Image (tube, rainbow, N blue to C red; front, side, top):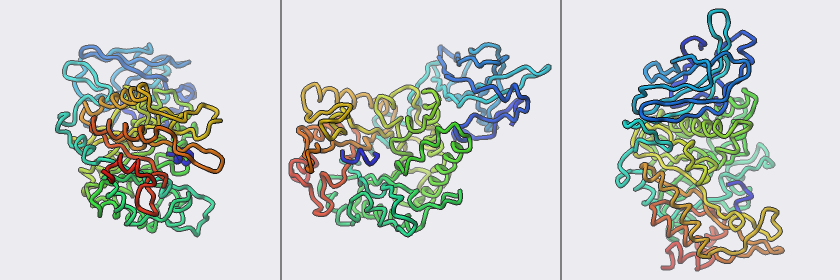
Length: 497
């Protein structure tokens, strides 16, 4: 959540690149080392898509001006490289006798040079997941485990009521200067220093999991190595410790973090490549640092920035592919660091963490080396005019109340959509939900129906087996008194029942 919500991508012959799947280096088009000017001018084909029928897969893409044909490449798991499988003259081709399982394809436009062809830039990869029957699955067809026994589904249930340590370790405060320490950043957005007593009180208030959003860039080196300060790690360690010591589940992530996520979508290849290097460096350090921490510590790939914020000028299909690649890179890095990370539960951020966009067939859950350890994260601030808009003069609308039969039915429909993931064996985390207060002069007033909204979120989460995590910046659970500001909400979460 951003602060304003708080109140409320070598050869040109037979092989492309050397990147081992499932990771895909960066988001810039692959370079084929082509020196001919005609090939250099060829753009990567856009809107690569597929349809499947029986054991055949048809790939289709937009034609590229100046192209004499197109090369199709498939990822070879043995050589860990993309291998050219055919060259075609049109912008459509059908692959026959495709085996069951996951297949990754890329397409590059080519120009004829003498008796050979020279290739330009390639598309980002597209994944086709073939079932044994020849049909495909767009969410992740091969279920990690059975729906009933999936470890991650059971985990979500065990996590119970969840709570966000909002506007705290994710606070971004460049004005503090180089002399600031972790505690200064922690308090920069108006929240008190986190104490063990606060978390103990939270446990007593009916919560069993805590999400700790983090802005690691607050104290990180600017030498291109992206080294996270030891003292910043120390403070995160303390807070994580408070949660684990209370036998609660803890989630840590890379949050908005100053907005550098938008660099992934830059048209400048160096900028987009640097974003991926930063992402890799951060998760490598975080993963190694916590490699032997409790299994109750969960890593989350991102916040709500994956999607629109990383899209840049890419089309929507390319944007989804980019999000899928970032999430896959995250899983690969964590698993490669060993220790308890081989089996650690990992939370995969959905597209914009939006339910409808995450349920889109273009959003694909990553491959993993172990079954049943992945969960998906979405946020719930719907309707936004009620949950986010805090004053009646808001330009895009305002609602001061919630709770009609239609409102409740809409929420149920939204939650029902996420069964797509539990049916495929993935636990579901509503990583954030909340309602801002209404701003009236110098006062902030609880909107009518906020209690009913929270009650419906928690009830539906229990019904579907999700863990819903309240976004809170001292608005509901008072960190100073270690209790709820209003007993109405205490009853919802169980501390007054």
